[in-house]
Length: 62
Image 1 (cartoon, helix red, strand yellow):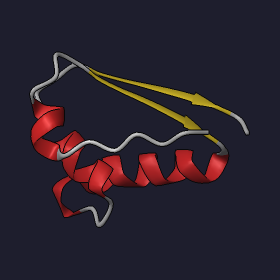
Image 2: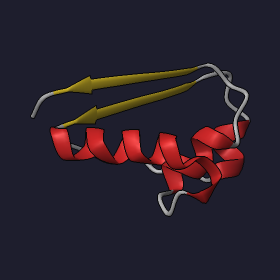
Image 3: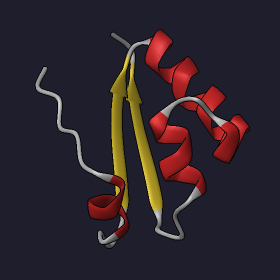
Image 4: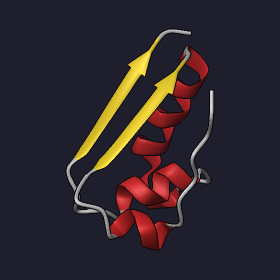
């Protein structure tokens, strides 16, 4: 599956944040990052904590 990576500046210029992940491990990372917020070591945690954008997270099992 292709991976798309954007800078935080590009993400904050969007109208909405859409995240698609597959697998239980990635789901666990997203959930952990959301709980940790700005203190998360994961970039997604920082992006989610620093946005006022609507966020849709789509998860599917692997």
